[in-house]
Image 1 (tube, helix red, strand yellow):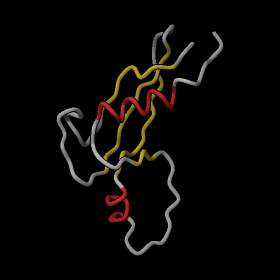
Image 2 (image 1 turned 180 degrees about the vertical axis):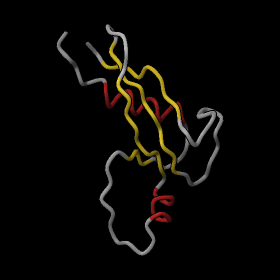
Image 3 (image 1 turned 90 degrees about the vertical axis):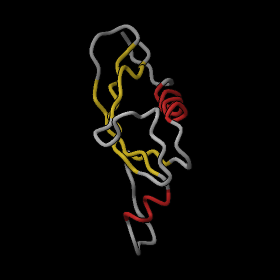
Amino acid sequence: MKPIIVDFDSSDVLDLFSYRPKDFGFPLNLNIGTTEGKGADNFQLMVATPKYLKKMHPGQSAVLLRHVLLVFHYDFTEILDVLTRYIQPVEKDS
């Protein structure tokens, strides 16, 4: 069974496709299911630019991050493509 993004949303951004920020960081919820199953598991990550992360961690020379997708410009279609390519190699036995 191959994983797929079943649904997505953000508590901070109402319309992810028309959103046009410059420097940003927001939580993104992903519901990931399989091509052959019902239901999905919920995953959350932060989508952020380097400038936003620098602003959130002033004066620090390094920051250890988990669950962050670093982007250099905002294009939600491209963000979904990156996430889809990331989960595609994962395969679960049925």
